[in-house]
Amino acid sequence: MFRIKTILFVTIAAAMALAACAPAAVATEAPPAAKAGLACSPNCEYSDLVVGFLQTGSEGGWRAANTASFKETATQVGLKLKFYDSQNDLAKQVAGFHQFIQDPEVNVIVLAALETTGWEEILKEAQTAGKIVVIEDRRIDAPEDLYVTYIGSDFAEEGRKGGDEMCTLLANSTTKNVWELVGNVGSSAAKDRGQGFRETMGACGIEITNSQTGNWSATEGKAVTEAWLKASKDVDGIFAQNDEMGFGAIEALKEAGLTPGVDVQVLTFDATAGAFKSMLTGELAVSVECNPLLAPQVYEAALKAANGEELPKWVPSQEGVFRASDPNLQTIADGRKY
Ligand code: GYE
Image (cartoon, rainbow, N blue to C red):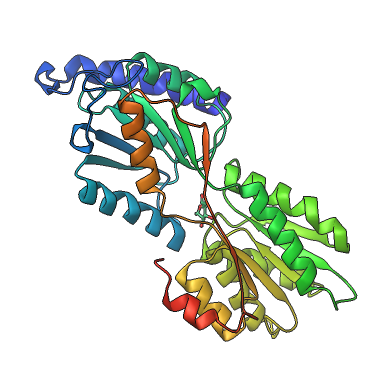
């Protein structure tokens, strides 16, 4: 909360200074949207939407697929997309949010939140400015009446699935020591996957004996695992909160003379193409799917809101679990879009 409040104050001050010098001519034709839909309601079409998308930044295969989904679908449906790369920096994401609130052309704002907390005030500002706000990918802790809907995964359920899968993987292991590679601290994906895994891991006596953020990256995932391996090789499973950190851990295990899939079971989340490649070698044991192709549902929700329709506050994604032990894995991999 304090982080975003400070950032907000600085940003508003900067924005006011900026607004003072911005040419009034910037104002374009799109009128600010009414609370219950846009001015074109109830006959709004995708061509009436100008979407400001606040992406987190670029982390790995999942994020690249998510970004591509927004850019490609915008072209397909014929809406104007203003893409903002927050470079995994919360201050930049807040500044971008402000920029879109002040942009008269933008009538829809889509947020993939870097952190769950601190969004209430800026959401109120967006609402006052008549912007339609849709939350995608990561949930936030804010009153639901401040945004149209959240479209994204049940990360806690993914975590619970992960705990169940790790129990199966370690069924014949006398010890069940698991190391956790966490996503960016403060994000809902990281918090909820960790909480969900801890809800089900107890069923088979798993213990998390190391836990640290690898910030969704293969490089950091490898470095963190290397440091742990220098201290001890007493590990039976790696719970990596995304594919990339899992790939890094696999490299570290091999360089330490351990065989992933034999000595240590590695489980990840996302199930990107890279995960299938690694599962087909047997190095990665399981990947719990998280669907990045969310743009069609997000744009559809924005259009419905533009036409004054009420929407359910959460549209959870449909997702599965993929295992190296699956005899049809190659066929499944051949049919994947990301
Ligand atoms: O698991 C990870 C990405 O928010 C679900 O963010 C997303 C996560 C995904 O960096 O790979």
